[in-house]
Image (tube, rainbow, N blue to C red):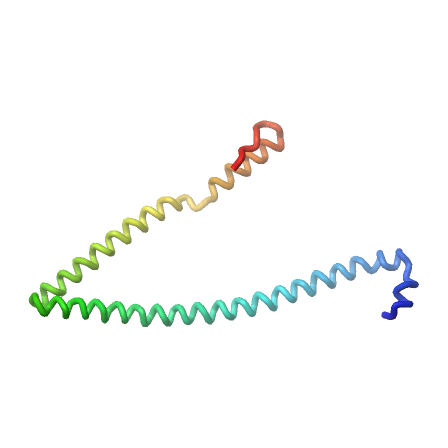
Length: 136
């Protein structure tokens, strides 16, 4: 539109255009959001795939290092004893990781956000005038 036609529009015309303009703005913003999120998810998917590939090769690297440890110990001990020693060390590591994992799972159970629920209840009571709002 030219500057002259914009100046001649009345207030009522501008107000009547406002809902249409707002709807167009929201639609454009949603399209922009969709485009941006698709692009970001595409890059995240590629990154996750690369991490999975790296984890695959890291697993085999770990296996080779375990074999190297067994072969290194086999120089001074019989092969079966070296394998048992390395297996025992791995078992101790597994047990420690399982115990730490169990402790973390117990901290996360129940999965409901109990602290947030408690805080919201305090806020509602404070709004009702029943209690005081606790300072976090």
